[in-house]
Amino acid sequence: MTAPRGFQHDTDVLIRQVNNQLVTLRMSAGDREVVLAELVAAILRGLVIGTAQSSAADRARVRAAVHYFLRRRDNRHDRRPARSLAEDLRVVNRIAHDLGRDDLVVAHTSLVP
Image (cartoon, rainbow, N blue to C red):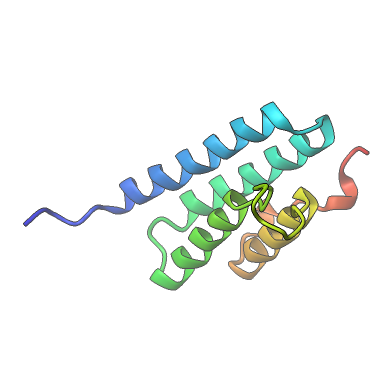
């Protein structure tokens, strides 16, 4: 029987997924969208690292936020419209706030158009 994977492994996997999504968005999105994607990615990285030793419930919320960011719904087979990165920022900000990490929250209105 193998040993269970540790918190560091889970943290590394989630951060790698966020970084890979950011690379993809940098290649396909416009400048404003890339700025938003970088903000979302930074918040997610902070949440992943900040909750690595937190409760299972908090880690699950962060994992769900990462998966929300990863699933952009821009697949041509998905009939739903692609979600905006502004919506991703709103959701991730909310999770950061709910987890008491207001230091990671970024006001959308503070962004340069």
